[in-house]
Length: 288
Ligand code: PEP
Ligand code: MN
Image (cartoon, rainbow, N blue to C red; front, side):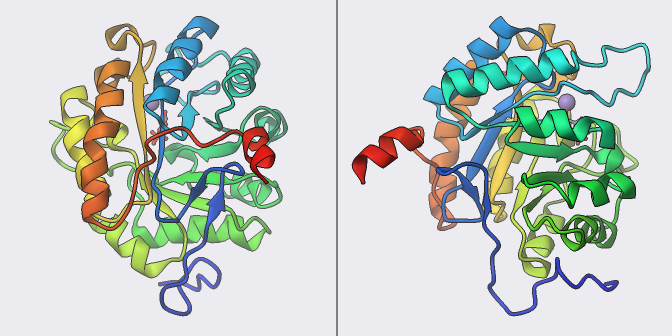
């Protein structure tokens, strides 16, 4: 391993806890499940998602406002309007939101509207972006590059850490291989390795890994069994009508069922998945 000074486990068993809100943190006994559509499409869509998923419950919502699409002719996301929808849903439903930041110019507005800034696979080695995120006081969800080695992944995290931001969560989202039957190949060996090699929380994105909705649930279960600290999953009120990544979107109903099915898997590996949504900070302070 290259000279990763900050990301690497120095004494055994140290685990960094990354806070998403007062109530939700990555790296503890409780897993963090993030779910939502690939892209924020409109306000009613996100309202439906928030209502269904808060009951599941999941701990945070996802949805892209700035989308890194392979084709410049594909829908590129709603941009600032998407961020505003996210932040309305976030305050209306009191649930944290995670969304992608694609450039340094977007950092300020994404950090204003979201609780966690996602670096997409295509930007894992955008070193200027990583350095700039090192100066932000918000947690960063760093996704593994499409064909990045574990070492390159750890060094990308090192860029953020070494520029001052210690709140980094790693996300394994599948890597390119010779077989395109599944969109990518989920590298669970990397999850186990990263958990030993680093002290950072590691979550898994089974949706982009497999690319087919009927295969998302088994991979999500395998990810939890492999020691992941959480999941990020794409779901949609009308999966086939998703404006991006429709083939891998599961329904809200299937997402709610999946959370239930994941609980015994988590318990089998000494972890938990919350049964109810964390109390709002207001409710918590009234208990003190
Ligand atoms: C996404 O989360 O919607 C996304 C674009 O993921 P990735 O960067 O892993 O391809
Ligand atoms: Mn997607």
